[in-house]
Image (cartoon, rainbow, N blue to C red; front, side, top):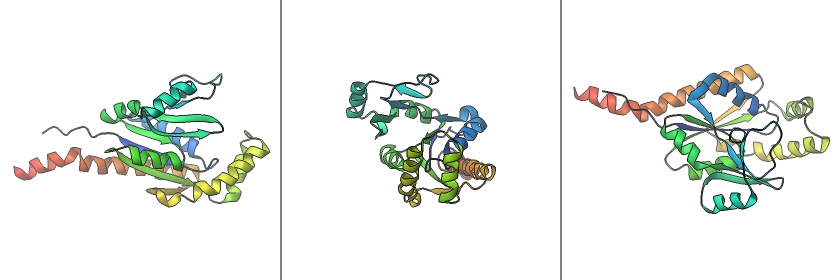
Length: 211
């Protein structure tokens, strides 16, 4: 008997800014290759010189974004600093139906919306914690990408982000990047095995029992 291909998983990873989420997601994409697809958001903000349409974002007008929102095309959407961001559902559904797992690098509000809108898809959520607030602030300052005002804003927002840690299936402390990545990858591997048991392996096991 042929084992069916399971639908893809929705893998949500959230953290306060500076906790290492983007680096962990980048490592995961390199490790997984074609087995893992990163969701691409639509946004109304201007495209930067180094950004590629359809790879970094789908760049749309405010009017088009509102039409997509009213048409229920987004799994999640939010306004950030006056710009709108949303995850179109159709490309995600296409990957899931092909058995490809989909990675979401989003905040807790987006995670809540996806849980509500994902319907029958299997959602796995992981929250990344820094070892301390002092370590988080050090990372934000060390990467030298933000102004002092932005660093302070990100630190104040971090408390709100972290307060939602209990909403997630798994919580990892990123005190060592390599060790944290190994735990993250182990979770994805285990959840794939669980999904195969519930979907693909079920029919095979039943057929073997009947013989």
